[in-house]
Length: 246
Image (cartoon, rainbow, N blue to C red; front, top):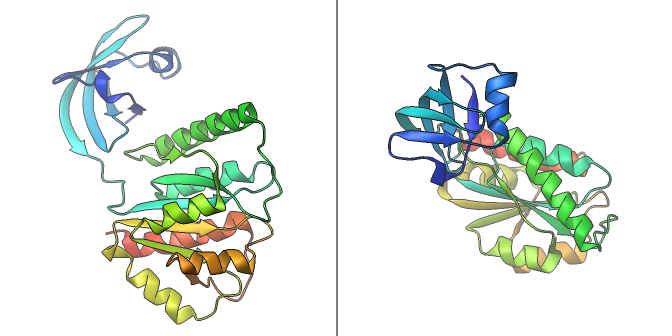
């Protein structure tokens, strides 16, 4: 069944009103008709199972038959703090992280970040592009929410934000003790908000890890191999999902 995201205010007591580009997509691309069934998501975790009742050039009205909370969301809210990588790697990271269930993604400027987003307009365009990718990945994977891509943060602000979560971890190539990593992963279900901090291509400097420790952010190892930045976060999230999925 086809799935569409609309603003909560477009969902009434018994009907939903679909406007904008989705109207053309439903009518002319999918060639859906009156009485066809669709799923409407409010982007906040609620799914409305609907039947199309009216169609016009500018609006589609669908009757709500059933409402459910989506089953695709983790009960835990995971925030990925991602050191900015080069080129289009961030797009891949966002797409796959959304598929894996993150709640939000925060791009972070660390000491070894090569990319510099000094132009405010360029940064805004990047954020807009990244949010579009997050929305597409959410639709493809049947998410109940569209994860938010936050504005770029400095390392210090990211540390402060991460320290406010119930648990925050930082995979680090010089960390040791897979047993400790297993202990952390086994305890995840006890935390509602979890942060994962990932370095850029050059990794973290030791001083940054020390700063993270001082904020009670826990360094963990992902094994004996050094992973690329686009691999490290996804490997960590995969481990977490394995422990958190019911």
